Length: 296
Length: 127
View 1 (cartoon, chains in turn blue, yellow):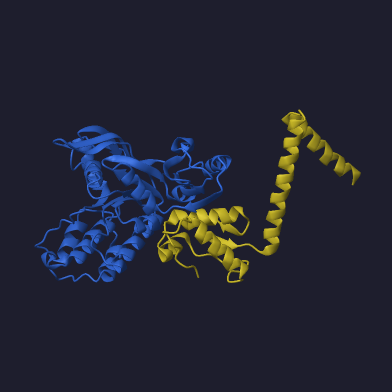
View 2 (view 1 turned 180 degrees about the vertical axis):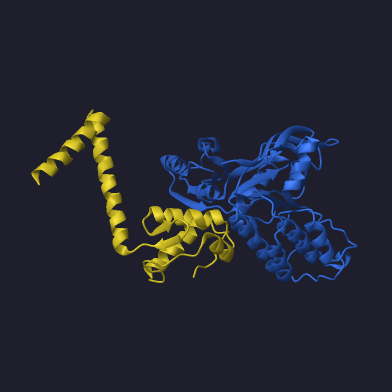
């Protein structure tokens, strides 16, 4: 597998504020990788560094093999990556038809079929000025301009922000369709449901640091809650085993969150004479909340 | 034919989809020779990751439920062929266990191979 995005100890500080604190990312070709984090976790700063729009304070990275911290190379990145920014900036004085024609002229790989399909599907009024579009329509237009560029890497910053559920499903459908045709998709989001639906890899960022980096199926198969009831109260330190991410004890009841090694943990809990042991699946939302709160 | 999997359940989407295909075969909704939807079209219909569909088809192929014909698509195998692949899998398991036992007895790979070959050759002569 080749990496289309790689970073090494990537850092960004604004004055005293450390927005990104030593990120090591790796996104493999052909994947749909979700970049999950709260508002202000460092997602947008990271994306802007990947595209050479802001300069890293330290550390480096490569996108499609080009260095993100070298002016000339980052220009190649911006030419070869389709990017939809969070702020959905557009030329307000153009009409929808004009901005589509204008954008198209820069990209030889422009997908005309997709452009036509999306104009119809998103019900975008060709003659209307961009300035007069609703927030949802603006988002749809920006996505169309990104999707139709025909690039091998698509980076989306909060693509479904402000869209209604029908439009969100449309957008996700285009994402999977492009992925099926070989496009790598890297998208930031705090919408856990959509991440679970289409991503095959999850990167979770909190306060500028990576707190989870795993294939989605592995997260679903290996993360478990283990509830155990003991005849006597137990010490938390008896339960610090490999794979245990979190321990909560309440008298004789213990609840553990495990990221792997569940079988041995259960065996150990039984050995400590637990009266009942329940193993339950954990949703990505619960993992997210725990990762974020654990550090709070 | 297939329902959208529930992404928020603790069960991975590929496991849910695999169950759906198995169920469709058991109920007869899918019969031997039937073609499954293409990877891209199924990913688009269910709005799930195409790699998930690939994983499901590959695993079902390994389990002997379907066959992937390159460039053509995925097809349900007949019960007869399924039984045959299952039989082969059982046989492979037997061989694996036997080889392990012999290794435990202290025989090396070369010796085991020679024993197998001698046995097969003897079988041929006896016929």
